[in-house]
Structure formats: structure tokens, C-alpha cells
Image (cartoon, rainbow over all chains, first blue to last red; front, side):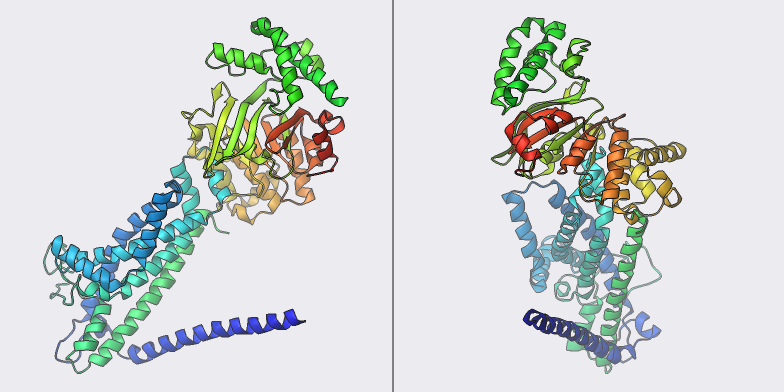
Length: 295
Length: 334
């Protein structure tokens, strides 16, 4: 009887905590959306920002954020997958790999402003990449890669041992067992983890202040040659991302509608991240179904 | 009493065998004395159905004795033992987990196309032994192996062994059914396709053949492209067996294949084992003594990493030579 009432109380507490979290999330989202959505228009999403007059948009910033995300993921995903596969399937379990794992953990919990400074000193100055999308992408890789490695490693470790053994017992090589038996099973987990990493990239500001820069050159959206200086696809141009733009507009914006722009941009940021999450989840499920003939 | 009796038959068998093998005629005098002692000591049980002395001599002479103990021996030996050719055998096989020795110098021969059951209490090493036979135990961190396993004239404990190729010849079935997260068809077709069967018609035929062999065809033929995970536990286990025979192995290793299944499914698996033994040499680990008695031709009793006794199933269950075997099968421990 006592156990039963304790159980009931604890259940109530847990449900309460759950509701609290949902309420917080809803309030936050609601606040951002209600304040910002009204300002979002096609013009707002596509036009360039104004520094003094009102009516500026966030077109280049939005594009920069997406482009930076793609760039970072192009670098991070293959490296992270490779390292994760190595750590979980090939590396011997000894002090060295334990040490590597520790470093990976530490690296992923680095304050992003520190990573930004590191990027400024090493990537921007030492390597001479300048304030550019590429510098930003490399800086983001520094703390995204560990996350990606851990996600992959844990996803592969979560695959039941019998699945792996079944592949090997059929006379499959280790590599083929990993790619054809284990990866399809762990794919949803990897995709979900990758989205989280992507969300972090998309919302990151501090690490980009010193690496990708706070200004965006005039972009010519009709010029898609990545080698041209004004081309949006040029990875070696400075680029202000959406999150950085929000920070800048809020702190030093001179335009009379700076507050609305910041609110609108925040809403766009949140909505984009949400879309990313939902889209990638759907993709993960669809991939899983395709690779495993459904459930 | 019983102990002495078996020692005799054991020695007799060895003697018969050595004399029957022409090349070993010279060692025939010396051989029986040695195994008798070994049988009495029991711990490193002699190669049952084979003469350890003979095998050792031969391996010293020729690089690869292969199935040395299997030299055709009509007449005489048939009296004491049906003596089919061993499909493979182990010699002084030890398995370690770090410092701990889990299997202690086990030598045993597995007759071709027969079912050998490995029984023994939990932790006695029977699963470890089974998993060593296709080097699957290598995957466990800290596990190492010592001794010899001869399959088709090849010592697979040799570090140069291509384990990937080896495993194709040895199918494996696990305690919990573990179909791939793929369709029923794909589960079976996966292995053969990897090994080079690309022709769609040939694959279709192979899948049907394997599913028929495992008595699954009629139950699943209308939903071949649905997930293998949607099947019941017993069906999943038969699918796993179909999957492993699809790559045409010679040997099937089964690690408690029915212990996670209901009685009806268990009966089906047992029927299946009786069918499959026409084509495959089967080694089955089981906790269920009745099952061992029902499905196997020979039974090996493991205890604390030792092969305590290995003989005809009938004999093990009616008249075991060792007291601990008797105690175990009559349920006094384990």
C-alpha cells in the first residue's frame, strides 16, 4: 500500500516535470514566433539588410547560414563517420583509445568562444584563410566532429552483437558487415545525432564572430561561379550568418526597425531548425525503411 | 566399475583404430597404453573416435594430416563404433579470457553429417568452445585461443587462416533469433549475393530452396518482401537457419537454438535438425538434456572447461562412464 502511494506520487512528479519542460518550450517558441512571425515576408527573407534605413532583410544571412551548414557537414560527416567506425569497430580497447575518447569528450564541451579564438589565431591568421566561410566551417568542425564521432560510435555499439556476428558468420568481411548490416540498423540514430549537430551549427554565433566574420560582401545571386569574389558559392569570402546577424542587429543595429528584424530573424532561425529536425527525422525513417524493408 | 568398463572400450577402440590404419601399424603397440592412461586421467580427453598418438605421429610426418583419423576402416571398428569420417576435429584446444582458461585442452572429433550435442552447466565453456570453432570468439576482447582445429585439412587456428572465408563454410545459429533488419527474401539472399550469386532467377531459386529446407516456404511465400522481424520467434529462428545454409556451409553451429522458443517451435527446430543432418555436420549447444537426447548422435559433457566425457548419446544418457556426467544428467547438479 505504501509502495503504491509512493509510486503514485513519483509518477505525478515525473509527469509534472514533463509538463514543465513542454510548457517552457511552448512559451519560448510562442514568444519567439509571436514576436517574429509577423515580420517575416518574402521580401524580408530575400532582400539584403539595410544599415541605416528600415525595411532591410536577411536574405544573404539566411543563405550564408545554410551554405555554412552544408560546408561544415561536408567536412564533418565523412570524418566523423570514419572516426566513429574506427573507434567502435577497429580500434583496440587500450589506454590510447581511452585517451582519444577523453579528448573527444573534452573537445565537444569546449566553450565555443574559445574555439572561435582558436580559429582566429590558427585558421584565419596562421593558415591565412582570412575571415571566410571556410574558416567558419573549419572552426565549427572542431567542436562538431567530436559530437559526430561519439554519435557514430554509440550508434554502432548499440547494434546487437548477434547482428554483427550473423554478418561475419555468413563469411562477410568486417567492412561489409559494418556497411551492409550494422550501418542500416544504426542509421536512424546517426541521422538524429547529425541533426543535433547541424542544429548547433545553424545556431552557432560565438565561434563564427572571429572566423566567418560579421560582414557580408555584396552578393551577386546571379553569379554561381564559386571562384568569383561576389559569388554566393565562393567559400573563401567573409560571411555573416543568421545567428551572428541577430547578435549584431541587437547590439549595434542602427536601423529603426532593428528590434523587429532581430525578432523576425530569430523566428526564422527557430523555424528553420525545426524544419531541419522534422525533415531529417523523416529522412532517417525513410532511409531505414528502404534499407531494411520496413517493419 | 563403470569407469573401468569404459576405459576398456576406449582403449579397445583406439587399438582397433590404430591397427586398422596401415600407416600406423608401427605405433599400434605403443598407442593403446598411452590413451588408456589419458582416459583414466580424463582431463584432456583423448580424441574420441581417433587415436591421438596416431594423429600426432601423422601430423609430424605430413604437414597436413587433414582427416588423418578418418582413414577408411571397414569391419573391425564398425563393431565398436559406427565411426564415420570426422568432418573436423580439435586438438588440445584451449581458450583463454585474459588469464582465465575457459577451455582446457579439449580434443574431440566431429563425425561427418552427425549431430553432436554439447551439454554442461552454465559457465562450463560449451558455448565458448562452440564459438571457437568458427573463430567467432576472437571478437571478444581479451579472448585468445591455443591448440588446433582441423577442418578439411586446414588448421584454422593458424594465424594465416582467412577467417572470412572460413566462416562461409561454417554456419551459425544463435540463441536469440537474429534475422537481419531486412526482408525475408533479403535475409536469405544476402549471403549468396555477397558471395557472387547475382542472377535473379538463381537467387530466387536458392531462396525458395533454403526456405523449403527449413519448412518456412509455405508460411512466408506470399510475403517474401516483408521484414524478417515481423515473423514469430520460431519462424525467425528458422529464417536464421535458412540464411546460414544459403551460403552452403559444411558445418552448422547452433548455440541453444531453441531455448528462447515455445515448445511447438522447439519441436519444429528439432525436426529440422534431424532433416539437416543429412547435409550438414551439426554441433549444438543445449541446456535441455531431453533435447540433447532427442536430436544428437553423440554427446559431449563439459564441466569447468574440461571435456569430461564424449560418447554416443545413447551411452551418455543410459550408462555414462564418469560420475560427474551421471550426476549432471540425473539432475544432481548444474
